[in-house]
Image (cartoon, rainbow, N blue to C red):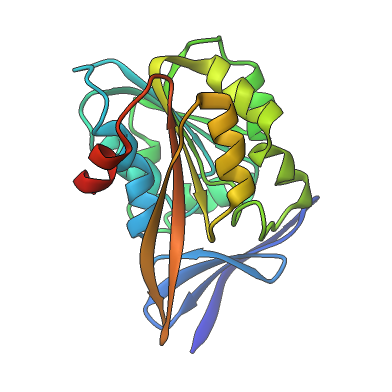
Length: 231
């Protein structure tokens, strides 16, 4: 059983928030993007990066993609975070959060540490100072091989990843979410950062078993086994 809670049409197409059984679901142009039934990887996007930073305070985090708010809320749970800058291209999605259609995120958006920029993450990132970000989290599409917006393909390629490296502070971390594995993305991140850890997280979708993937690179060398064993 499903119910449409909100619908909007922007220049990129149709955005729909719906309730399916006991979960909220976000769709773009009819394509499933995410829901509230499976949130572990969205939350892990934050925890798999933040927990490995040794700084005790003043962390600056940029999140590409608000989604259903789980990554943002996990970032704000870390008391070391001084600023959480969220970049979301869909103004209507931000409004739905603020209007309370997606529980718990309105309070997060009101947190004094949160900045919201409505726009393209590549353009917003370009305006940030070099070395000004400790953690950069990208969850703007379903991954390089399952794009909702074709224009997002550039976000998974070396030129943009190099700009991400420029914006990271020494010791900073980039993490990218993907619905599937991607040898090309893994290779591009290794070319730029020298190393990349791919984390495959099992997910049960109805009666189907699959995996979602996080690709994590650090400004300095780190031990892949240590990161994997801690998750």
